[in-house]
Length: 169
Image (cartoon, rainbow, N blue to C red; front, side, top):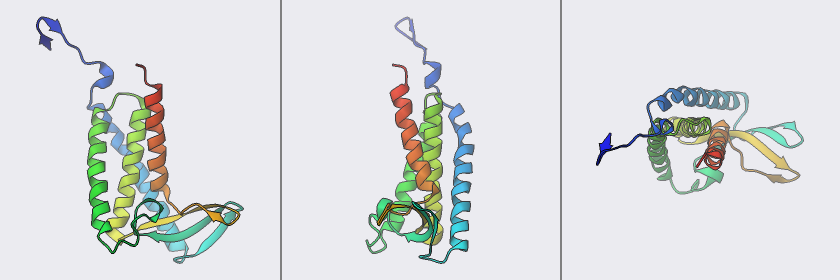
């Protein structure tokens, strides 16, 4: 490409196309999430808690809201809102994955967030809530129950942050 006689080159790290190959990872993470939720929902009764270690229980809970049960008691409008929001974010993630720099941290991070977001969307669309089954605790204090999709989202965000901090300027 030329402007006023100068050749303008896009750095190879900024070109797209190859990022969409990473959608396979999102699919694998989505399937792992759905498989683990199926296991928890078929092996445990709703509300059941099985101690695994002194700090971890395997549980079976439903979350009709967002993270930390935010909006869980909102009256029902939150379901289509959260599904729509997650689908918009997922579309943006696919675009960003397509356009992301060819850096491992970016591609892994975006793929992880996408797999996690779609894992929770499948639950909301199919069941009306998200299946949660991981319960970490200390003494009487319990972190809100969560699932692998939530792990993928947090892991992906951490990878993106790490990639941005390590990116050559």
